Image (cartoon, rainbow, N blue to C red):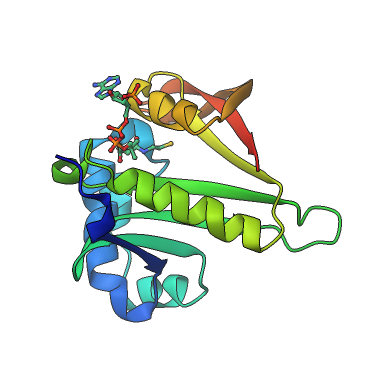
Length: 168
Ligand SMILES: CC(C)(COP(=O)(O)OP(=O)(O)OC[C@H]1O[C@@H](n2cnc3c(N)ncnc32)[C@H](O)[C@@H]1OP(=O)(O)O)[C@@H](O)C(=O)NCCC(=O)NCCS
């Protein structure tokens, strides 16, 4: 049963750093196609670095009560000529909460917030083999506009990604 109403969306702050760091490491370990960084790289982040990144206000979280179950980056452009665009990513919901609406709450929150801030185009990259993420974004109307070749490498092997946009 999907109980989306119970999930809460909000901007992460420095004090969220421990849960956020744990999700970063877990995601990179369990879903390497979804992250540019490795779990080992994620593990090297200090608490101060994590706090500092979160205090910049570019990361959103989804919660079940007080428990952080997912997060995503939201980078809104600030230049006069590019501020109609924002990039999403990384985007992650912990395994136990996949398929039950938490990811939808997170992306709905991002879209709503972006609209309120006059963003007209959301952008993201998805590995061509990340079928679950591709299906998820497609349901929201994201379109594949190009392929980014050799964007990152797993064990030295090149990976391609779709560049996707959503006009909002
Ligand atoms: C991508 C992610 C956020 C999506 O959240 P989710 O809760 O799993 O999404 P949903 O279950 O609502 O939707 C996923 C879709 O893929 C389908 N799906 C489920 N398992 C699948 C699988 N193994 N392979 C392909 N498709 C699958 C679902 O049926 C659903 O399709 P539908 O919309 O046609 O019903 C989540 O899976 C995740 O965090 N993945 C790991 C990190 C990642 O890859 N992030 C994206 C980086 S760009």
